Amino acid sequence: MILAIARKSLMYRKSSVIITILAMTISVMVMLGVEHIRHQAKVSFSSSVSGVDLIVGARTGQLNLLLYSVFRMGSPTANISWQSYENLKQNKDVKWAVPISLGDSHKGYRVLGTTPDYFTFFKYAEEQSLELQNGAFFQDTFDVVLGHKVAQQLNYQIGDKIIISHGIGSTSFTKHDKNPFVITGILQATGTPVDQTVHVSLQRLEAVHTPAAFQRGLDLTPQSVTAIMLGLKSRIKTFSVQRAINTDKQEPMTAILPGVALAEFWQSMAVLENTLQIVSGLVFVSAVLGLTAMLIASIRERKEEIRLMRMVGASPFFIVLIIQIEALLIVITSIITALALLVACLAISKNYLLTQYAIGINPISLVTNSSFYLISIMGISSIAALIPALMAYKGSKR
Image (cartoon, rainbow, N blue to C red; front, top):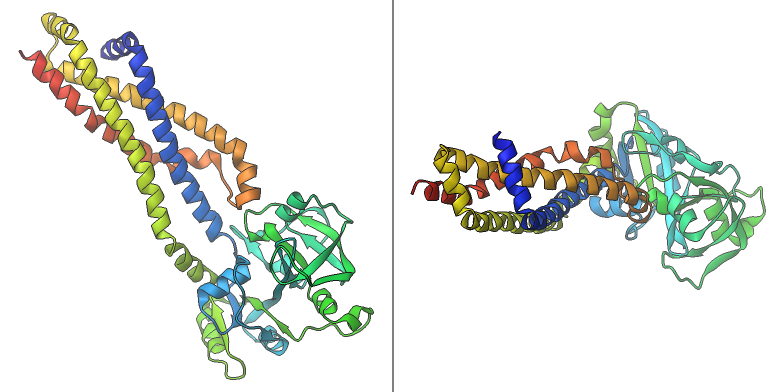
């Protein structure tokens, strides 16, 4: 009965109620949308590399090593020798070792030289392996495998030929155009920097930097590499292997744990993260204030209605309860509308966010991830509705 009375009361004032619902819907969408994308961006960021126990590079800070080896950002301070790679590969505690070499680019996208083992052992997210959308992984010295975004943005197909340039800029005056690469594979989208990477063999990179080596059959073993990714036989040995590498007297090197470095890097983004939360919170507060103002205005317009309810036996508590139920009906309607619109928007923009910004979005998890915020929204709205409810209570006692 009381629910029917509250609903009819809202319908009687539908113009102001609709405007309040729209304001609440927009604020809830902004708040939940910012929070969900922030959470999903953090998950995507943290899942950029998985299954790699250590990353080894020349002596530098762990954030710098993480940025250029995983995110293709910045430049290495120096390379490490091929002999160091061989030594690490033969270490009794090392299960696999994958060398990577950076320094070239193709139309603004980083070129990564590596071995076929990269596609076997490098993983992302929850131990997910790299998979092909089309073609095959490189087998020949002159093959190239493109990340999903590279192929999409540059409209490349299997069999196309590309030329890489020295350096990491989008424009270069030094191009290795004597023997172009042939695209043999295009990777599926991963939501990681892999999507924006051009993958070639280490031997191929050595060949383009050594003109005489273009003749097949010559030794194309590189002299040095940018970094090495390691998988260990036992994770118990992680810290001991890391310590041995960091204290190696033959060559100054740094070994980092990707998970620790990722956590440190994300922590450095805390200011931006907190700013986004503050902005979305302020948007919601403004909507709650609008809800309170609308209810207060309705109390002034409903003096006769409240008086009539008191005349037929309604208690002051009953009046307060009606105001609270009206506020909750507005908030619940706004939440349901906001969730439906937000899920639809995220589903539509899912592929765009993945390919353009490397953010993997799961629209279905929005409700479960936002349950705390949904409960908080209803709680705060109920508290805000106490002001007009108490006004109605005092007015009804006269």
